[in-house]
Image (cartoon, rainbow, N blue to C red; front, side, top):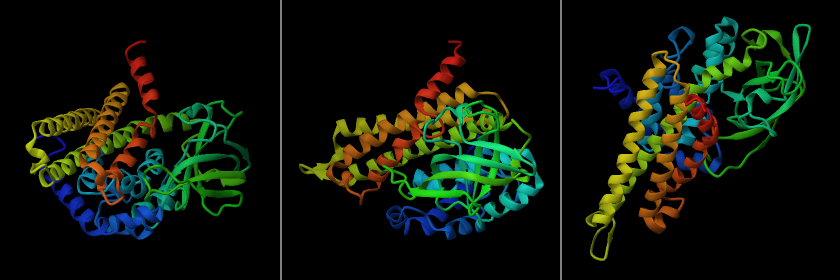
Length: 379
């Protein structure tokens, strides 16, 4: 029995599967076409105890750790959900950890507890129009003016930006690109804070994405997360969990596509016999299954080390790249095995094919991960 396969986590899987079956599957296609999930889903997930998994009970969470969060993410996708659903429903997984780590009780009471109760939605705003993975080069600036910061700048590709009640926002306190960063919680409705157009995407259709702009937005100093000039370190410290979440979404999507392909190849007959009756097809399915399971095993190994507090930045980058590469290969093969049906919106595999493409971009691109790996090799 592995660390992620304990009796408690098997129960967590069952709870997640039941939630997806009842509260997600009958409605997911409609959410995909609407471009967002309903706010009520957050409250429902909170009531059954899923929304707060991985957050301490002391801040309103359900307890558990990184490994429990991985179990939930994996099971949502394996049960017929999607990585887009994970992104939409669990955006707080990247919006709240900085506040929890800072230990500011006021911020916890105002934002963390309501979000984990499903009554608020939070987003994380780091990426800017003229810079993606270059966190140190952030140009959105926050200038101190008494008890407030005056914020000017813009953000883009912000997950849940349309629905979010507040945005954990990275801004520089010196000149643009200085790397002297802070994190501020900025509430929707604050004068000068504008949520722009909904961005239409290749995949993750049920996850709303927005552009944000800040024009002389006055944010109370009380909304700062942690001390001055600690924003960059705070952001970096949370990247491992985000990257492992994306890695989990990748291998879980691959595993789900293997399941879908096996079912299709058993049921679909051509030239008088099932597709699975052909050695070529069986071998292809075997290769897909092997690659998905190998990625799962490595991500779990790295996640266990992160949960134990080990500094494994290089291994996290490798785990993400391994899982993303496995996912890209498996979803492509799975759709090919489905033939013409796989190209239709009615096919679940079609959604996974589209959703998978973002996983090598979000949380640090494959190329950025390779840079981290190269540094870890001493290059």
